[in-house]
Image 1 (tube, helix red, strand yellow):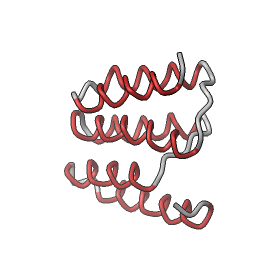
Image 2: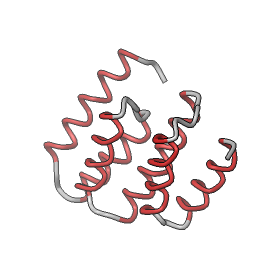
Image 3: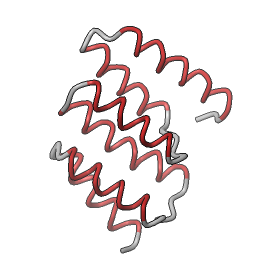
Image 4: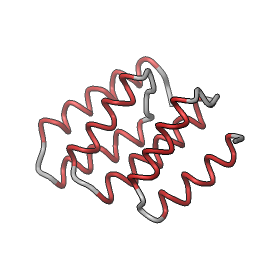
Length: 112
C-alpha cells in the first residue's frame, strides 16, 4: 500500500476515535518499514496520540509514547502536548513535568 492510503485510513480512524485500530495500523506501518518523512511520521504519530488521549487513560498514552521511542520514532511537540493534557486530566503532574522535560530536550535537538 502506498503511504497516502495508510494516512487516509489513519485519519479516518483518528476522527472516529478508533484508537486501537489506529495504533495497530501505525504499528503495522512501522513493522513493514513504510518509508515516511519526518513530517509524515509526526502526523501519523500525532493522529494516534490524539485518538488515544481522547479515548483512553493517561497510562496508555505514556505506554504508546514509550513504545514509539523504543522503535526510534520520536513524536513531535504537539503529540507530547496532547500526552501532557491527558496526564493533567488524570492529575499526574509528575508525568506532565517529565514530558515537559522531554519536549525541551527535543526542541534543542530538533526545532519544529
